[in-house]
Length: 230
Image (cartoon, rainbow, N blue to C red):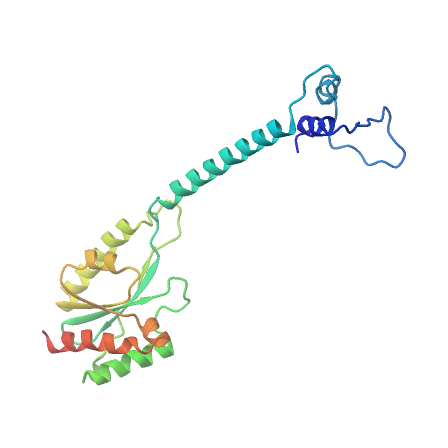
């Protein structure tokens, strides 16, 4: 509490403050060094001076507290409306036919640059159900990781990620004659949709299906449509 305000409280309550004129034996060092000017400021008001009442002091404190609360809320609101500046993700690519490329969303923080055993097993089972032979699956395309580097000068925004992914996919289309894409994920759907300049199908990620098997039915409908060429 502010020392002047504390003294005003004590004076209003009729409590006399005691100030030693010299250092007391065994007393800890004071964290406040009083000068003659500051000592005069904290000196209790004389009986002739009009001290603020407790009601006035309490009201002033309440106004100060409310003002600080309003400032904090305004700052929080401003921060919450700011767009997320960075995008972070990994995409694993699997070519399942001559013209279809699957993009599977992977955690950005993962150590692997490919599917883990559970993800791989689920994906192969899905392909088997679609009558796609396992030996036809091409896992050789490198993972796309964004950002490419953690260098401070690199633009890590979603817009930069979209442009980079667009360029990468355009090269894949040219090299492998891809005409259809399947994106298995949800968190960056808009970014992927904007980056794909071709036929795009979207379904749940492998991790989502592993956590909630009921989602496989929804995914199955999308995959059947893709496999049939509808």
